[in-house]
Image 1 (tube, helix red, strand yellow):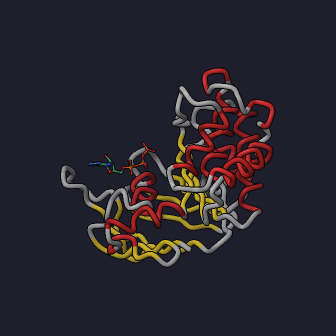
Image 2 (cartoon, helix red, strand yellow):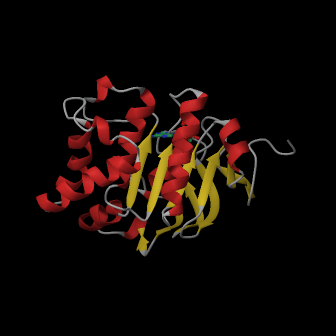
Length: 229
Ligand SMILES: Nc1ncnc2c1ncn2[C@@H]1O[C@H](COP(=O)(O)OP(=O)(O)OP(=O)(O)O)[C@@H](O)[C@H]1O
């Protein structure tokens, strides 16, 4: 599903590599935490999968795409297989909950009838069917993140990338969001989540890939945030 082979990334304006000789393989249906201190390369890792950056060396494979070699016109096809969720939700403020989710399908040209059918289904999945007509600023942070997850998932992507999705949420709301991500994972969707949240990583006991200064320093099957805790 995801394979990084000897991947290094050096940004033009930077002296040290953001990623250095990274080898990671993630199978279909896995749930993986990507952890490490600020600046260790987590976001760079995710950006390489989306072809927002290309590696300086090495190869990035996402499903059957050799990401760095992909022709520019095929990049949208790659991105349609990947749903993204961010710390700051990134909803469109003037669109309702349902319109935010529908928009993700409109931009890829899905028929109106399909959109009408699947938007309520995915809003039900995230528990927001009663708030379909609200605007984002009428929702709590946790609800806004649910909308963002619904939007990321509505096209049934092969994988979900989440960059600090609980970073702006309190612990209880964060747990709810994790339950939702687990539910999405159980549908067969691969989930890769970058996080600093110790308690979430420790409570879930999923695979943990740890980066430090751009290198993979740990890859545990059922890991915790800190080693030996
Ligand atoms: N566009 C860029 N240009 C130059 N250097 C960059 C760029 N993006 C990231 N870097 C550098 O690459 C390194 C890794 O950054 P990255 O954002 O991937 O880390 P991170 O682990 O996601 O950090 P955080 O947890 O703070 O988001 C850092 O040294 C950062 O300064």
